Amino acid sequence: MIDSLYLAWQYIRFNKFKTIILVASITLIAVLPLSLEILLAESERQLLSRAESTPLLIGTKGSALDLAMNSLYFDDEVPELLTMAAADRVYDTDLALPIPLYVRFQTRGHPIVGTTFDYFDFRKLKIAKGQPLTILGDCVLGAKVASELGLGPSDSLVSSPENLFDLAGVYPLKMQVVGVLEPNHSADDLAVFVDIKTAWVIQGLGHGHEDVTRTRDSTVVLKRSEGNVAANAKLFHYTEITEENLDGFHFHGDTSIYPVTAVIAVPHDEKSGTLLRGRYLESEDAQQIILPAEVIDGLLQNIFRIRNVLDAVIALVGLATVLVILLVFALSLRLRQREIQTIFKLGCRKAMIGRMLLAEILIILLVSGVLCSAVLGVVDVNAEELVRRLFVG
Amino acid sequence: MINISNLHFHYPGSEFQLAVPEFSVAAGEKVAVVGPSGSGKTTLLNLLAGILTPRQGQIHVGAVAVSDLGDAGRRDFRISTVGFVFQDFELLDYLSILDNILHPYRITGALKLTGDVRQRAFRLAEQMGISGHLKKTPGELSQGEKQRAAICRALLPNPSLILADEATGNLDPTNKTRILDLLFERVAEHDATLVAVTHDHELLPRFDRVVDFQTFQSGEDS
Image (cartoon, each protein chain N blue to C red):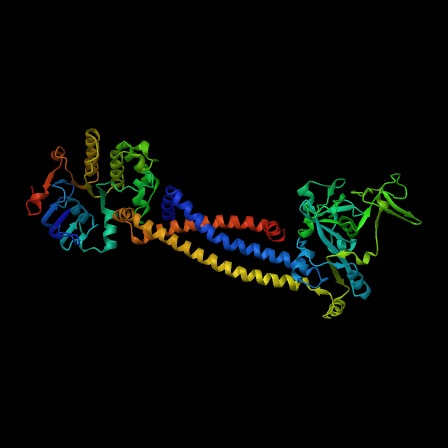
C-alpha cells in the first residue's frame, strides 16, 4: 500500500491544479452545511440562554417578538410604549421585582439602554473599569462598545438624534462615560447603559436650563408671577449634565406616566410567577406578559423550518457537485487509459491499479477532510462572535 | 528459449492477420526483426511478452507455455522474465526518471525495491548517460533521453528475455552504438535473449540473426 500511496502522491503532486479544484469542491460541500449547523446551534444556544435567563417580560399588547427582541437583544425595532406605571403595577403585587427598560435611542450605532441598578444585578453585570452609574447623564459601556469606540471612563458620548430631519425632535445629550462592563458575551456587550431618567432626559422629558429667576436677559421672560416664571424658547437648555448644572435638571409632572419599552419581571418564586401571569389574562388589559423563552423558541422553530429548506438546497447542490466530481474521475480515468495500459504492460495486476486509484481518492479525501476540519475549527472557535454579528447584531 | 508454432492472431474488427507457422530463438541469441510498417513486428513482441494472447498456436518461452497462461500468469511472466523497451517509451509523465526506472518494483510484489536495486538503477542511468536527469520528469527530456530511460527500466530487473521495439530509433549515431553495446553487454552478462525490432539496417550485422517479416510469415527464416 505504501507504493500505491507513493505513486498516488506523485500523480497528485504533478496534477496540482486539478487536485486543488477537487479538494476545494469537496471541502466546500462538507464545510457549508456543517458550518451552518455549528452557527445555527450556537445561535440557538445564545438566543435561548438569554431568553431563558429572563423569566417574564411585560409590554404593551402587540408583537411579542418585537417586545422580546427589543428587550433581550436591544433590537432597534421599538415596540409599543407603556408607562412607568407598568413597573409600579408589578411592584405593587409583591410577586416580582420589576426592572424597567427604555430601549429607544442610539449612540454611534449602539443602543442606549435606560434602566435601573437592578438590571445590573439581574444580569450579573460587573464593572471592569471605572464605576457604576452615579448621577444623571452618566453612562456605562458594554465591553464591545468600549473596545469598538475606543472609549473608557472620563470620555464622553453624544446620543444620536432619532430623526435628522425633525428639527423639533430630541436634542443630543452629551453623556459622561463613568465605567466599562466586563464582557458577558451577550447583547449587553454591545449596549450603552444609562439610568432610565437619563433616557428620559435624552427624549426631552426631563431637562435642564438656566435659572429663569436669575436671568438678566429680560427678553427671555414672558411672564413673571408669584412662584411661577414663564420663559420663551430663547432660554438656554443644557446639552450636557455636569455637577454644576445637575440641580438645574428636573422632570415635569408625574414620572409614572413616563414611557418605557418593557418591564422585566423577576418573580420571587415559581408560584409568584404563575400568579403574576394570571394578573394579565384579562382581554381588556392593555398590557401583555410573555415568557421570552416561548417567544424565542417559536422564532427558532421558524428558523429551523427555513434551515430544513436550506439543508435540502445544500444537499441538492452537494449531490450535483458529487456527480460532477464522479464525472471528473470517470473522464480522468478515460484520459489515463494509456497510462493504465502501460502499467498493465509492465506486469501490474488490476487490483494494484485499483489500489493506486483508491489511494489517490483517499489522499484527496484526507486533504479535504483536514482542510474541512481546520475551517470548521475556525468557525467553531469564532461561532460565538460570528453569531452575535450575524444574528444578534 | 523461444518456440512458436502455428501462431495465429488478429485484432477484433481489423483485417490485419498475423500468422507465424514456426519461429524459434535460442537462449542467448540476439535476433533482429525487420519488415515494413504494419507487418506485425510489434504485435509479435506483444504476443511474446504475453500482453496479447493468440487465437491459435503455441508460444513457449523457456519452460513457460505463455499462450496457455491466464491473465495473472502472463503478468507474473512479464515481471519475472521480460524486459520490454516500448516503441514510444511509455514513461509516466508524473514520475521522475528515477521513479520511472524503478516503476516495475513499485507495482508488483514480485520485485523488491532494495538499496541494491537503487544502486543498480543509478549505475545503469550513468551507463546510459542520463544520471543527471534522474530527478526530472519525462516532459523535460529529449526523445533520445526518454528512450534511454525506457531502456534502463527494461534492463533493471535483469530479465532473461529482452524485447526491444525500435529501441535505438530516436538515438543519434553515437548513442545508438553506445546503447546497443550496453544491450548486447547485458545479454551476454545475464545470458539473456534479445529480440529487437528495428528499421536501422546499419545495425543488422551486429545481430546473430535477422528475421525479415515479409518472408517470415510464410515460414521462411532468413
